[in-house]
Structure formats: C-alpha cells, structure tokens
Image (cartoon, rainbow, N blue to C red; front, side, top):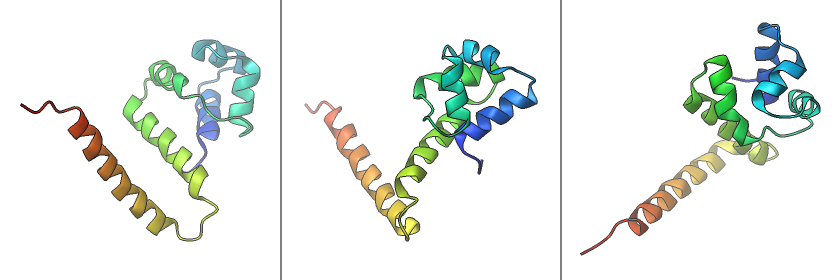
Length: 108
C-alpha cells in the first residue's frame, strides 16, 4: 500500500459504507481518535490491528507489516539515502535477532 495507514483505514471504512462512529466502536476507540488517525493527525495505535483485521477479514500479518513499514518510513523519510539506511537496519536487526536467540538458549 502506498497510502498512509490512516488513509487506508479511511478507504476501508468508506468502501464499506461505515460511519466514523460505527468503525470507532468496533475498534474500541473514540470517534475523534479515529478521525485524527484517518486525517494523519494521530498515529495508529498498534492494539487496534487485531480488531481491524478481524472486522474487515484482513490478514493480520500483512497489516502488521504495513504498520511497521509506515513507522520505519516515518523515521527515515527525511534522509537522502534510504536504501543504504534500510540495508544497515536490516543487518542490525539480524544481529539483534541472533543475540536474542542466543540469550533464550539454555546451554548444558
């Protein structure tokens, strides 16, 4: 998805003929909060992802992927060379994953 997560939620809501009130209630958030999310004035709270997935019958893993990719994009968009920055972040993530995996391993 190229649009923001908020724009995506707005599109889902509009395409399904839902009011802000109805979708906000389904997501267990305030109507004004949902409006701010859709208009890009507030970040999407991660805890609504499972509810959003369930309500619209969407793949939760794909939603989480889009959510995280937007968070990363928000961090790096001011940078000129995002490709090299993402490559460095990927290497760092692999290293951290290795450390965390080793910490969870019991050695006899």
